[in-house]
Image (spheres, rainbow, N blue to C red):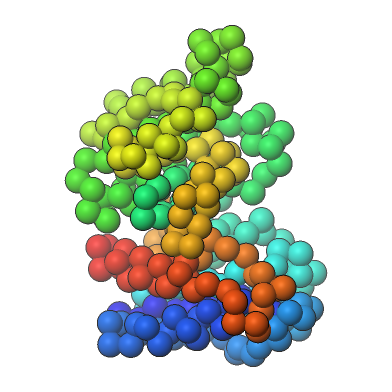
Length: 285
């Protein structure tokens, strides 16, 4: 098995973390650095963004050819990538298009040792995420979360679905999205799967309940609703997984951290966890 690694923006911490992590997996499975890589610590620019973009394109070619069985992406700068023609909200959406999958059919998921969260929507303004929320997004995220948990050894996943409003709407007192959107999604998940689905759950308490072991995973309805608790609890070991692709794609949950690049201060835990999880998912697949 070969896991490909793209360093991400060469001005960030990705290159040094990838090198550090690569030394820890020798003998377990092969790692392959994808693309022409160089280090430009703390100095982002167009040249570095072009290298990061080229590495992503190369990773797609290698995945299609079977030369690598999974890819782990170092962090990129969306600002600089946009300046070189990368018009995607993130790497999640890039791989979806590359493999002919609609953006609405993939799920951004954060997998940590104590909390697993799937997002119904990802990189949108809060207004667009709320106004555009549909039951099908919740169903898709719930199915992908449960399927990923099963691949990781959870036989019958227990899934909690967040409400959108405080206290999950308090039976309509604080909003009606739960009745109109969330409840129908939960009913469909229960009808079409054998998973244990709970909700709508109050967002201010459900993540602690999951952390304590009551649920195996949580469906969050927008980006920050899920990522704030995930990064608070397991920042150094949480992995970003794209579910719904025909290939395995993971990344660490942190950004480029230009200010730390080249100083040896960045922690490699999340990058290491991403490589390890990518290997586990390939074997389970």
